[in-house]
Length: 261
Image 1 (cartoon, helix red, strand yellow):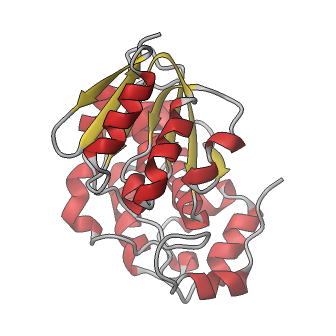
Image 2: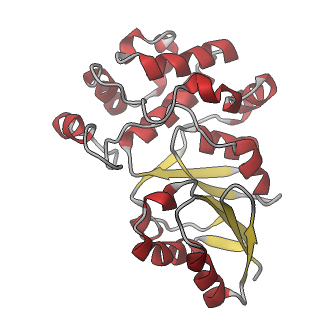
């Protein structure tokens, strides 16, 4: 059953601190996904990635994942993901796609968005009605100006490939990461949880990490990109599961754990 957003709750939550059901979404990633997706196993039938700005699932598909599920605590993250997929399916060229990204950051009324006639038919009615009702609010204003990170947009070759391979909206799991593993029935060859651990209280980070490890198939990997989780969290996890996993510490606060059996 499709989640039906509550407009009054959305208005109130948008101005609350932290991340919640209606938190503003990023309009563009501030991560180098070309680098992090390069750690995806060569055979990745199923991937689970944070929705974020919608770029994580797109780049997971781009880098070879055959099926991608995405998750987030914010409904607006689902919206930006679906908008980007709709733009690909609606035939926007790369220039118009880039302009759409900039317009979404600065424009509050989605009905005034360039090429909205190509995008809106590919969104659900519930989703589009919500976006129209929230026209006085910038829903995709999390993070920095997209012009700062425009190098992380798909290039011409990548964009053409995305148009060829992304044929339908991604399956979206609406969940706080603390409850994510309990809401999934599938397991994955690649799990990418981005910077989310920066938002988890340190006392909970070990338990959350252990719950996510259960989602990873043999020869699969989980990737976390964070700054605040202490090394002790990973050391404790590796000590607990060392017979089945190996830990890869990469630069730039990138942590990768690979299931070896």
